[in-house]
Image (cartoon, rainbow, N blue to C red; front, side):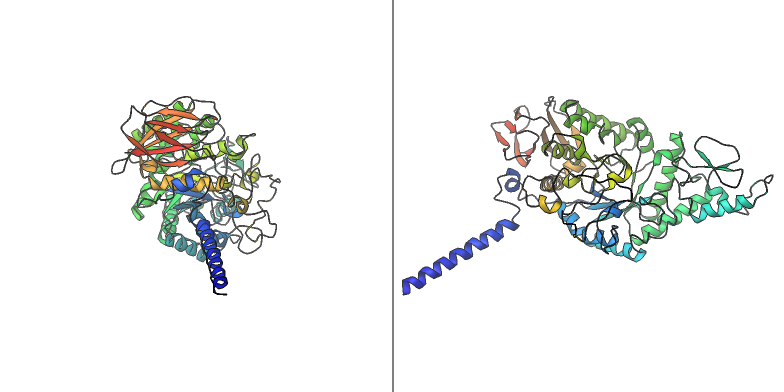
Length: 540
């Protein structure tokens, strides 16, 4: 009887140990996975830094997360997902416009001091700021100062004035200052729309519902000072500027001068305010705009289906050319603004999603492409849903499809998406399913960002070329004063590669990023890197 009791006790203890082990493995960062990076990178920790070289998550609120079951994403939904964003490794979010607007995209503002009722209230936004800061997350407000909605009170006041003005009278801004807020003309011009019921035209380069502001107006500049003061005092950490190449059409130097005014205005209120601008143009024009002193401009030459990232991952240019492109870009921008912070990205709300670039790819090439962006220096931006390989192309609405939280139609987080959006068939599983797969895109993104955050030289360093790159292998240093140097070796090809590093100072393998169960190894100065995988090495 005693032996039987002992046997039962031993069995019970054995089951308890097994259960405890199962729980441990569940929460231990997948230590027992067949994928090398989970165990190899397990001890990596986020480095303590305070600079603009952040990792930023872009959110289109309309389609991100719904907190009140009306089908439209809102600020409450974003708040509910801040832990998700933090867990991925992001330390900053950029939210596309949240001000009142007659459209789904909100880039035609009717009130710069309010929040669109579909998204919430100013109090909700204040709560969002507080919840972000409590988690160590910065928040960027998207501010549109190139134009307003034609429903904005400024434009309506100017329009009413011109309707009342006798046809042979000249406008008097002392009587109606709002006439000076926009660019009006009695003569039809390219990019101008007729003001119905009058003999006047107004500049509206994007469409008639978005009248362009007169950014030379002292009245407008005073309004802008008031607007940025209002939101900075509420705690926003900076601004994303829309369409900076359109402030003065075809006048790059005038655009630069307005950027200088905007940056100086914000920095006078908050010296730590971070400003990034959308300059959808080439390297030379971006370089000119950097002479304004702006912190960052999005690095468009690397982005989208025609950029350097797509070119190298698609095999259209050599990996060695990608390394050279990063160096040339840095030299050009640094010569214009020595304290600049690059803003690399791969896709955004205006660009077709990256999973659609590779028709036959089942994941590895898509993973590699975004890693190329995330491992660039500067403040790296990632569009919501890219971490799970969402698709979306064609018309604008399709690029802003609902975040694919799950396949469950009753999932309360799911949004309906913009009106007139086509049905978008996803290529990869939902987030709920990807969390169960060690080789999913979502798990890959977590590891890439973990590596980025663990080695400060990756986001902060300058690229140096040891001239070991080939057509399919990119080999480059990241060096930053005050931090350990990092050597990145990226296999952009579909076959395993061996790289002889004996010509370099002694190195050790410090982190790995695998797109398969094939392992990265480093023996006697020879590094073996499987297809579409990445090795991170530091001084031995």
